[in-house]
Image 1 (cartoon, rainbow, N blue to C red):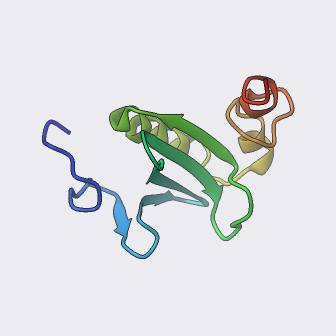
Image 2: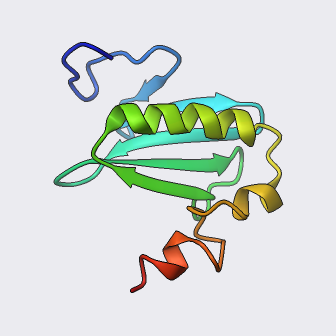
Image 3: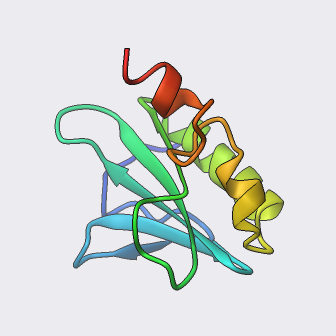
Length: 107
C-alpha cells in the first residue's frame, strides 16, 4: 500500500469494505478477519470462526495498518480450518488464560 489510504474509500485487494459496519473483511475457509478503526487512533484486527459471532477469537491492535493486513493473511492461512483449540491458544486470543489479554492487558 504505497498510496494515500483513506478509510472506506481506498480499496484493499482481497478485502471487502462493509459500509453498514464500517470495517474491512476477508475470509479463508472457516475463519474471517475484520479490520476496524479505533475511535481516536489506530486499528483493530479481529479473527472469528465463521458463523460464530460472540467474543472475537483473536484480537490485535496497532497504529500500522500494513502490519495488520500482513497478520490477517497469516492468521487466515494458519487457522483456515477453524480449529478453535488452536485459535484459542494464540497469544492474542482473549480465550487464552496465559495470553496477552489476561497477562498484559489487565495489568
